[in-house]
Structures are given as structure tokens and as C-alpha cells.
Image 1 (cartoon, rainbow, N blue to C red):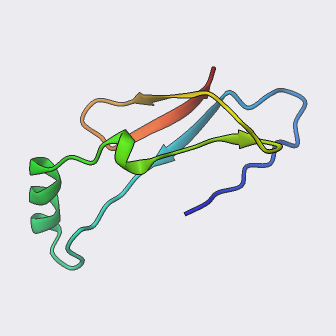
Image 2 (image 1 turned 135 degrees about the horizontal axis):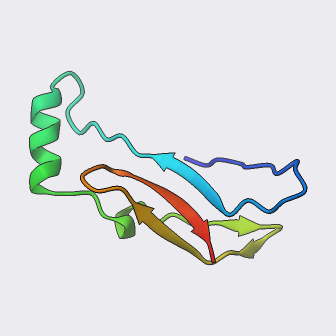
Length: 75
């Protein structure tokens, strides 16, 4: 999946909230939840990247406890 973020304001974007929902077994949420409790998804597996005008940006994941949710904070 790819997402384009266009900044039309005068201030730089320093945070971008993302929410990751996974469904290993569609139609069987209990089985999916059990699978991801036993095999949690990692940031390395997601291989997220950020670029600006073709230049790679440094970023840092900041997660909320007990959720597959975080924001990308530019460094």
C-alpha cells in the first residue's frame, strides 16, 4: 500500500498517525486475534519508508500501548 501526503500548509508535517489493522483469517476475528497475539506484527515486517521529493527521510515509530497503532515522527 502506498499513501501520498501533500502538505499545503506553511508548517512542516512532523507527525502522521497511522492505524494498522490486520486480518489473517477473514470472517474469523477470534482466530485472527489469537494468531497475532501468538505472532505479533513487527515494525520491521511492515518495512515502512518515508520520502520527500525523492529523498529518504528518517522517521521513528511511536506506539500506543497494547495497540497496533502509531505515528511517524520526522527526525
